[in-house]
Image 1: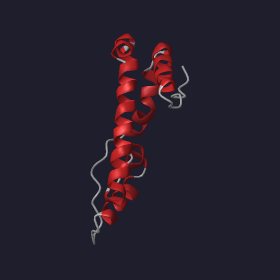
Image 2: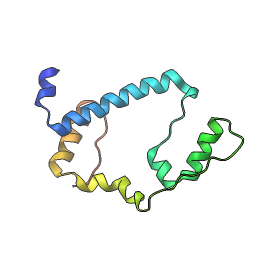
Image 3: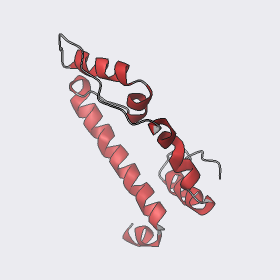
Image 4: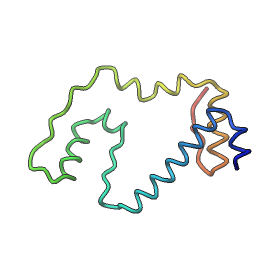
Length: 109
């Protein structure tokens, strides 16, 4: 496995680390079950009020959590990474994901 890792591109190595983190998080999710509240970054950006209401309900607060100031234009950042990848990087990500049983990134070059 060390030889295979050494042969991966930087993008491939980063993808492999992402896969490792996903597997660790799946273990944590199973271990903690209802004691874990997952906050999805995209949902936080798209609907901060609903996300903060979920946090408040999870914490059993009797009041609403004030929303922090949100930078304008942050919505464009959610998908910006797709435009910044070269076709070779997309291919390396997809190849690494495929080797470990994950779906391709589905990014259009």
